[in-house]
Image (tube, rainbow, N blue to C red; front, side, top):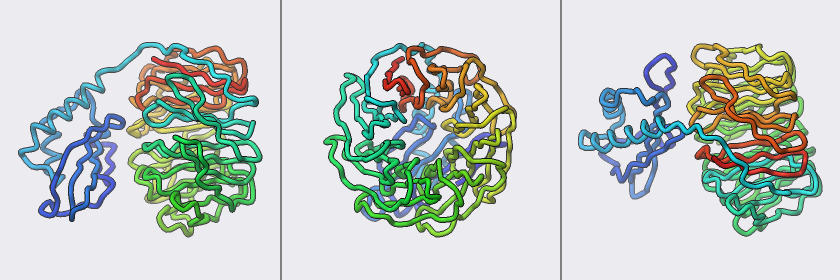
Length: 440
């Protein structure tokens, strides 16, 4: 993998190691819009495999012919005869980037989702299904188009705090609870596959790896655990943090896991073998509230109660950037799809947008009258979504830093908010026990 912030492009080949072009047969090209890339599907020793060529710096103004030259020179499977097909794919990606939709979101459904406040909400990749977790000890599965509840996932004995789909597949859900267990469910039938037991305290963070073969859980018992999805058994306990783990995230390929803890550190682990952390990201002066990888997985962003947002080089474990723009605790932070920008949310009632390459704080997003607990870019990177204790969500223009729309209607603080993969739907979940679906 190669990451070049100063060059014209950051393009990587993912998912499979390079193999001799004489031993493979290229079968088809697949297009990925967010972040932009081309998937090469090929046959190697009678096995169908995929290789991702990421085009993270592609813009509508990128000159296609020089880019084609670089791609065909670097990727052995690409031949001169593929040039016309590749040109068409690149032009499709650029056309998608030019199609910047600016229409407002309208309220589509108000769902009286739970009898107690919601804790979180999440879409599957296609956006046709979403889930909600609640203090009522359940997780519910919903049909986005009809607003109908398709399943209630019951069995936890305490708050269902953390929930996640196994995207991009979307056929399983994992729920993490204050009852110290996680549960794996069938989305289509609502059946329970497994109960994951082993933590000694509340589970507050869960995630599937991108291939849906592993689940990671983070707990107030200071540990994270890895679990085999097919067998429902613990494969590894990640020990080293000295306080609660409140955030975790897999890398894009799934070989690394990052965890954030109240011990003021984040740690990077080899998710394939477990063992000790391969990097300890030390530098925050207070509890770490959030951490995640960029798409290339060469950089981690973390937010902390010390009012700062930091970037970390995964290769060295060193902090490469510390933004101290917030005047109160940082509650959330994330990269956009390409890793060019970071957005952060704070208890100071503001969100910030930072340029990763220059280190500049491009925008301070003001307008909420309560702390902002969630922030997310849309897949296109053109909008920033913020959710606040003031009962409102706001949509911001990422380039201009202006508020494009305020989503109003909730009567209490909003705990969860998310875009779907296409960026044309939003769900918001609130302490008022309702979930709202918004469509563009």
